[in-house]
Image (cartoon, rainbow, N blue to C red; front, side, top):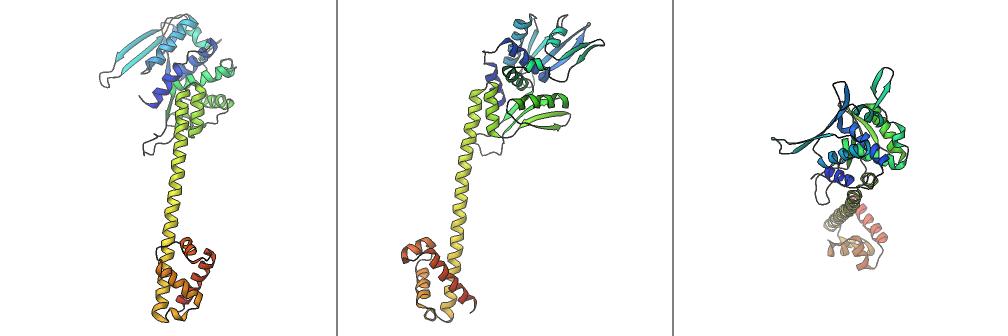
Length: 313
């Protein structure tokens, strides 16, 4: 099971939903996953999906809230071995259902498709929540990195829309709930998406997938801790390399002096420091300071003096 399927199943398992919220979720679900159909003078819709739980849930909503009996067909794909579900609602009453869902507007010229969200569907915060959740069930997906995997999978949650008006309108609704999405065009579709792991976790919790949302937030925390550890490790390695390079340079300068004028040509203080380094070639400056009883600043000053002398030889 993919993480997207896991999230969708968790959203559907939330049974404490008011009828007004069920209507909002059904409307956005049909917009995301459905296709309008016309036959025998009737206008209805059809949904094809591999998510049987979502199909069965919304079939139940159509029956309990609107009193219609949708046709549900289940068949197995011989090529992929996956079970596919087809939900069809087409009758003399299906047009009124689409009208109540804000998908169809009936004017003097006849029925027309309404690309924007009817505000009565999202008048309350609970209905906004359900509308967003329904949109995810219909045309949403989410990917997050694994706690253990070293792959470069990034955080990404998206809603897919077939036109800009619907995508822009949805972005406004989701923004009203405190989430700030980005909107882009991909081929012939418009994508409302999020890339921040923390915000994705919060959005999943908001939509009713609390377990999955907290799982994402745990991954964010663990990844940040691992990154911090790696940064500290890399910083330590960098510091060690710098210390080694400094030690090698100091030994080289001292050797140059030793082979030319000899260490006796140095002042007493510089000679003591030179011998200290030769006797402790792998020691850090902090370790040399501890051994000599001098400060790191004092040792640094002396090594700079030794370097100047070596440079002029």
